[in-house]
Length: 366
Image (cartoon, rainbow, N blue to C red):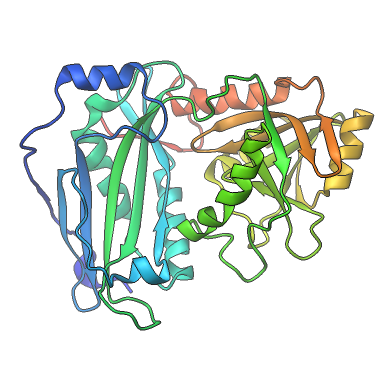
């Protein structure tokens, strides 16, 4: 659905009439939280069936004007991505695997009958926003600039068909730790709800998947847990993923298992990176099925020594306790495990330029 005119699209930069003061910005950076504070600028690129991608603008962050009949409000044609910009050890700024985010964005677009965006245009849009708002990148340990590219259907039309008009937008938010509890490991609740079914949109990063997870996530938090874990839709037996993160299971024999991508699980970029790093550590890495009953049994016997969740926002997070209607169980000592910490340290060191990037994952932007 992209046109030849999309190639070489030129950006227009609009001046900001009243950017945040340095004092206001520093107050945010001292305690950024997650997803509640935003930088001064945003990128907007338009798409229509006739013109393709056009009118690429980077300008002041501002509300979006939408017709009440805009297709996104009625038929949920909306997709998004999440990635981060990091301060490097040498003082430069870098992105981590933005090309992978661009590719996944287009897979999501295809599943929701939306136009694909040239991958180099996706990356350029993100880079331009980081460059103009680089002063918003926090320097505290573990902090970063979280980037949210997204696309919405803007055509005013109430018929059920793919829209003929869209906006691609990128915004940015200084980010600290994703989990606020401060616990050494998170506690998760086994949900009775289903996140995704075969043939559905489980592998697409679209808002509808996350909207469906809000009730079970709220239920988990009301019971004192940090996250919810979903089982498969067909048998309600096999582990799939958390509300917004993939899972890994580490065993005493050196095996590391993660649920296979069957179309109902989001193909996480952090997940994929950890597969590579784990193999380099000499681990036997398996992408397969793992049941809730086996999880409980292996934790009790000591065969399972660690479980961790991973994602762009939370990076690598140990899971200490699992609870559900049938009781609860603890994994290992209930705290961070050695492998979890080792893989996290290796990943973060590459992201922040403290270790050699032998995979071409880090993209420096000045």
